[in-house]
Amino acid sequence: MPIEAESRTEEGRAIDVSHLTKIYHTTKKEIKAIDDVSIHVDPHEFVSIVGPSGCGKSTLLKILAGLDELTEGKATIFGKVIEGPGADRGMVFQGYTLFPWLTVRKNIEFGLRLKKMSAKQKKETSDYFLKMVDLERFANAYPKELSGGMKQRVAIARALANNPKVLLMDEPFGALDAQTRSDMQQLLLEIWKREKTTIVFITHDIEEAIFLSQRIYVMHSHPGRLAEEMNADLGLFEGSELVRPNEFLQMKDHIVSLLKK
Amino acid sequence: MKSPTRSKLFKIREDIPKKWYWTGTIATFVVVLIIWELMSIFQVVQDTFLPSPGFVFTTFIQLISTGSYWGDIGISIYRVFMGFLLAAIIGVPLGILAGTFKISDSIIIPLSEFIRYMPAPAFIPLVMVWAGIGETAKILIIFIGSFFQLIIMVADDTRAVNKDLIYAAYTLGAKRWNTLIKVIVPALMPRLFATLRLIMGWAWTYLVVAELVAADSGLGYSILKAQRFMNTNIIFVGILVIGLLGLIIDRLFVVLGRVLFPWSGGER
Image 1 (cartoon, one colour):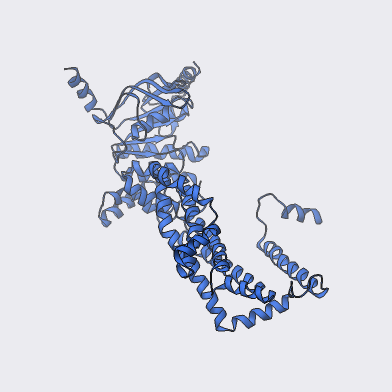
Image 2 (cartoon, rainbow over the protein chains, first blue to last red):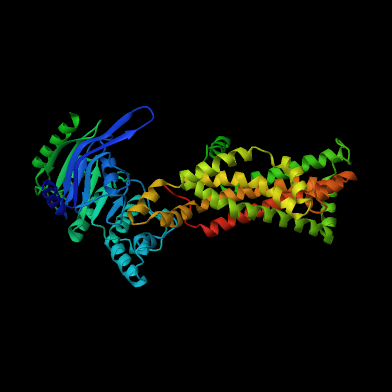
């Protein structure tokens, strides 16, 4: 049975998207945002999707999060068809989405409160993640007192505290200044290595994608199509230091040329 | 020397020192008082039509040392709060519903939009037929005047809640009910508070309308009564007292807002 064979391969995958098409209907016309895209993400893998604005990468992530519906094709998470949002897929957005009326700690505990976790467990969990993003001193601060980078650190902690199977990140560092951005990339990598989270990371920053990910999907725009899939786990970096600059530049140039097509 | 100060004070939408702000405010009040005083000193307008500031002030002192004026003030405040509370208790949930679910919007908003263009004072004769000239009538007029506006404004406030906050709640495992109660409602609170503050101002206007037409007590009635005997000084006091009460309540809203929502502001 072909169905059985298909589900067996999906089972072992954190995310499996096959022949996904997304069409938006406006009153006047149809707009094809994503055209026949197939991708997959393995457990514990860090995968980036790179592309210019309008390539449908954010839409794809929204569909994975269950915040948008696909038109054709199939999208599964650990073999289960995605139907609406759920706590198994945490998300970090580009804009600041902390709840402004909650303190940093309460923000991190938001998902835990929904799960009706005991007060002691909540405290332990939020303590752990506050420490992870180095914001223990700001546990009782309100979001408006935080800088942009700190806000995104809380957003990451809030998503991870919920113990999701997959972490979806939609250009989370897009609004940050260069220095903060590189600190955050470093921090994210450390967290990923320690927590073994499965991460799908959307960005239009090619260097960011190469630095962070094990695998990269490059997308074209209008309509959003897959251009190429490439392995980025080549040991180009040791820690944050670029040790193989030639390969790095080659890869970057290659992606740039793909995006120009 | 002159131009740097001027360029500092007239920067578009920039802050100026508090001292300068208050100087401007107080100076305006003083100038208005001086013009008023001069007009009565030089008899630009007859005393009967424009009593002097001093005369209005002594009338004010006389009136508030009588119990009956405090009775008028009390009953007016009571009416405003009852009308306002009634409108808020029913209108706020309806507005939140309309701003959250499109289907509730379709039921609530078009009708409210239609009714809010009907002037509340035009309902007074009808209200008198329905409810006489008792307390119910006055409260009903304040209610009619503020309720439909309130619904529409609260619905707008609700729609203004950043959709990404709702998405974030979903990805943290919140279902619809929790998203409404734990995200939309708290996110909406500061804006809702600002709306209630505005509506409170309108409630005062409708109070006076109601009391001018159909009442035998209250500040509006005291103004009407004074008109019959050409006691313009009492009319002035009545208007000023209503203004002062409005100002006090408005400031209370502002202070309460700061206490209740210390987290507000600085978004984005």
